[in-house]
Image (cartoon, rainbow, N blue to C red; front, side, top):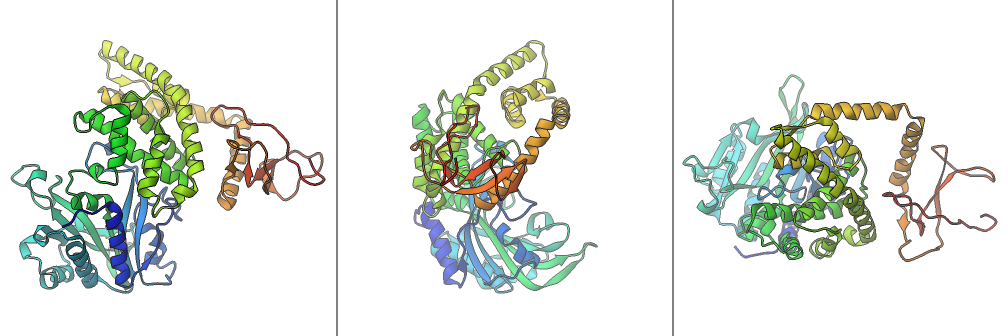
Length: 519
């Protein structure tokens, strides 16, 4: 097995499946066309309508390296070898075309012949009753019986939901060797340690789950596979964690250089630089795909990642905005093939700068408050931060509840989450009673619809004080309209503008909009 860059591995994967007749689909957006999901969390998400039979594809085989975001276990990022908020999932897909035999034998061919993984280190898991998959692994691949493991539905059966497409799956496992073992006598395939590492999951979607729990064969059988690029790269580059691969190392090195810490010398310092390296990738990609900071949904996740990274920098002694220092590294690592990072660089820079500056003003004050409260609790032998204090940190200082929980957990203190939620409900009631708040929410809806329809206004105010532009939309009384007449008051949405909009506490610019016969 030769050392290869993550970029090389991505290209080899795509080229391999193209050689097998697959159409290469460039990565889809992190914003899925699926109201049930906040983010694209797997390679199959953009193809979900094909698996459900809602749409028919123009091609029957596809390959992608799909950018994904998952934040369901964000607290583990940096603590483990392989948890990330942003990652790339390598996947090959088939709809009513090739099935188990090809999926398994071609996966084996890619891993052993193209990547060069040692065949004697590879294992397979299958669903306990999947004799078809067993036969391919045993008789066609030639995998010894003792290296094929059978597991139940919890491990080796995939469901899209309570009803609908589903099927057994087969995982390919790589033995990283005794140095990665937990050392327990029971350590084997299925152990939670890193010795027997799952690198590829092949899902055979062949059934339609009925409401009564029965499995009805699908008229067309499908293939959906997923393999983490970062994970495969760590195996190929013979490193212990994803963070030591060339996909992360420049970011890790930059963080260490910036803060003066030595990677590997302190678990807490390692955690901090890993979180920063992980989160700056996520933040750049999320903004490039049009996600903006807000207090809910995707925007809330983005804001939380920016603030979380900023806080870990603070823990390492960085008392200034620093996240944008990493953007050139992200572009160097990822701009090929992700051109959207380059195209949207000005927007990434503006948003990160504003958010980090905004949070920086309140971080110190909020940290001082929570430190005082925790110190007081410990002096009184208390173990729970009040919901009122947690809400004050949220409402006044911009601390997401999760950030307060993290700080408290680091000090062995719990939070009265029920009390926090009660304070939140009181705030909602105050908001509902305010007509101004209701009006603001109504107007916010029209902004979201226009942004989704025509995109974001480009801000040119750092270099221009006047410019020629186009009117994209008009708003009056919270509704989009077609014309504004003399004497009427309304709002104008521009394609580009030199005017700084009120944001982050700064006052918006004032000036004139001039056109022939109008001012």
